[in-house]
Amino acid sequence: MAKKIRASVPAKVILFGEHFVVYGKRALATAINRRLTVVVSDREGDGYHVKIDNIPTFGLELDISVGARKAYPYKDYDSATKAVAYVKESIEYLEERYGLSGGGVEIEIKSEIPLSAGLGSSAATCVATIAALKAYFGLSGDLEAIRNDAHQVELTVQGAASPIDTAISTYGGYVLVDRNEVKRLPLAGLDLIVGTIGSISLSMATEKASEIGLKTKRVVEEVKKRKENFNTVFGYIFDAADEITAHAIEAIEADDLVNFGTLMYMNHGLLDAIGVVPRRLSELVKVSQALGALGAKVTGAGGLDEMGGVGSVLVLPNESGARIKTALDIAGALVMEVKTGECGLKIEAGF
Image 1 (cartoon, rainbow, N blue to C red):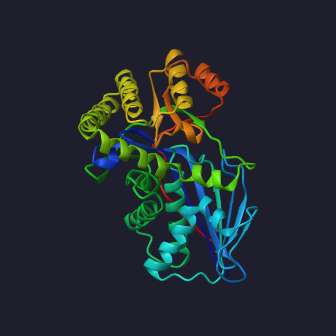
Image 2 (cartoon, rainbow, N blue to C red):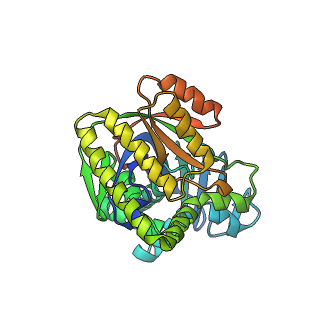
Image 3 (cartoon, rainbow, N blue to C red):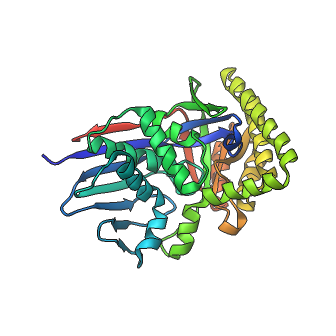
């Protein structure tokens, strides 16, 4: 009987502490009800065949035959695999770490998560791909091992990566990263709006699409450079961000959405100070604030103007949600209503 494994994981939003968490500060993240699914099954021939489709803001179906070194519609294999670096590295990592050998494996990825938008698409890809392949090859489905494997892949591709994204993709719910220790928190769910600026299209040149697809790595490197130039100032900023995260958890526990929203605006200001808020994302926050949002901020890596301002903002809408959604849509954002606290990794066999 042919093997077939399906693994699905949630998208994430970082509520507080993005970037600062890379330097040991606290960060709070939650899973949202947008998911990425990886299906692994048998195929004829040797090697791995990867098919990616149905990804918001990407609009590209890409087939890669690893063994034959062919890629469509891209003309050259090396450029094409840069656009799917996390899939390729996940396969190579598992082969080296566990001695896997693909004797004809089909990998199909479908996603509701926009790429390069600060919603954890890379971590979701790593966790779901690794979980599905480990189940397919009969390896342990231990969640912490899957999370650790996926984090190692992110580190390899990006050069630096917080454990928070892979933790959320694996466990779901809410996660606090405290001094690099991952803790799950039983917090109440929230209704939020996400506005995403995405600029990866089917007509985009391969080199540009690959560059934006690895945006997080570039943004993290830029922050590191600024920190080296202004180390003392950045120290104060990082400490402030750490305190904001602690107060935000208290606000959720007290069901104090007013203070929670105020803390969102504070965190956004600190992200702007370290240079990860491009003009287009800044405008989304400002229009949300003007329309009465309790809080709004960049979520995830943020972005750079020279890379098109790609990224997402997170909005706590209050009673003006409909007007805010319309305004974000007019401003050119992909608008999504989301709920926090989504469940984590799901693995199914023989469905």
